[in-house]
Image (cartoon, rainbow, N blue to C red; front, side):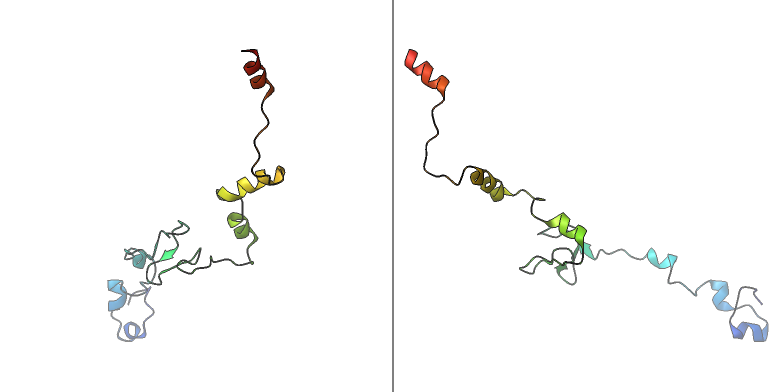
Amino acid sequence: MSSSCFHPASKSNGSSCINCSLNTFQTKGTSSFGKRRNKTHTLCRRCGSKAYHLQKSTCGKCGYPAKRKRKYNWSAKAKRRNTTGTGRMRYLKKVYRRFRNGFREGTAPKPKRAAVAASSSS
């Protein structure tokens, strides 16, 4: 009888347990991790993170292909990562500059004094 075997059949007849000798029980751990050869997530087209689930066809980070971006208020750090100012701000950069000048339009800049003096002397 094997000392590490706890099966009742092996204890009754005194023989070694076939399951324990072949080492075929309890194989949900280390040996199972080597069989994972497929990838469940790939790159998302909208946010670029590796959170797009291939079978579900949805992104776990931004919610693509949903029209609205995935956003919850239960994570302060996630709000910080995705708020205004973390991207390019192509339009808002110009709005800030126009605000400082009072949103003026259709005016020409005042001529520089050096340019005026050079043109009057020649």
